[in-house]
Image (cartoon, rainbow, N blue to C red; front, top):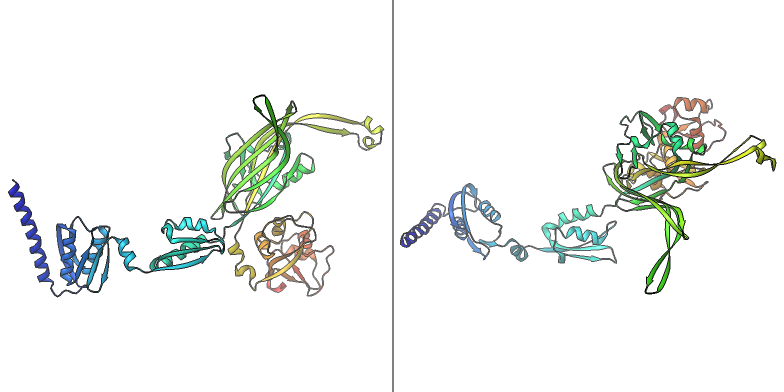
Length: 520
């Protein structure tokens, strides 16, 4: 049996030699780019490369990584293409040097023959350490160096890789989008909400502890007003509802902060007070007391993630209050809400359902008589009522697209800046709504990074398009202009700082809409 096997192996080797010889005789004058037909079955990989090199009249050198057997049928294929296919399918690389082909480990060949270059990239926005971590997926650790002094990253890579690396760094160094968050925290009479038929629990999403999340889900953009959410089947502009509740004393605005953060960074709203809490520790017979301060009130933590015109908000809300005291130690009640929700840019959501019982002192009195000194007490009555109160937080995220707002549209020839003087109760949002201009554009135009509280009398430049300037004629009246362009008279006066309208020929009036050509 052994002799038979040996004889078969010998025949197989002889057969391969004959095959190679026939190939060489058939293609002795073959050029590297000419087409060939070859068939290998169970042939040693090194012998296959030698056969191909012989066909093309070239030398071949293989390293120790070239091993194994190959079965392949090559028809109407060039010599170089056949080398590429054989090396690629076996995890090898090759280089052509003159009339010699080197075949072996791809990385070893790359290090020996490919040129490396080093470039320094100065980062404008990204953190160098974060960029390095991202690039380490593509490059070896020793190919990346950081210069924190100049906020640069030094990259050493093969020349043919550098273009791709430049593209990656450019993407990583894009400025993070800013998100401005408007939060309005209201303490509302639950009884009054019940009387009005308002129930947060209609919402399509709720948190684990029963708190409701409400958002505007009306898809009819032409009908829907800004800052609106659905209650039952009735659309209500929530700011109007809150204004009415505030006016009647049924709602108290605890805070209305506006804060800016960047994509992926946490923003914190802290409304409360620090109260001392004594912590005791015992060591044998000795008692040590330490005073710690604990925030009691409302803490709202918001982390925005920007994606395609929407903001995913990670919300953590904590509401705490001192319920009682035991041996001068405060007993603190705490409620938490944690949720994630996607909100369209500029839309409003509300978190409700955090209900508590409070004792409210109310004063009722006979008109006029109840205000009389001394005798007024006879015509007045004080009583303490138990009232259910609900804490509702309205959140409106707005995306600031710096790239878009620095575009030619904002700074081009079609813009004529208008100076507006800030008035009482003005915010960036209310001014933007008044002029029908993006609040983000107003911030960028005035080089303002954060929507801090505006001061009365402060001047703001509004990027007003030229086609919104109305040229007055002697016969004009503010009533006619407002009616023609469907604009509120009060808005026209407020925009242009007018107390009394006087038509001065050729003077200009700014409108929140485009004017007709004849009125420019």
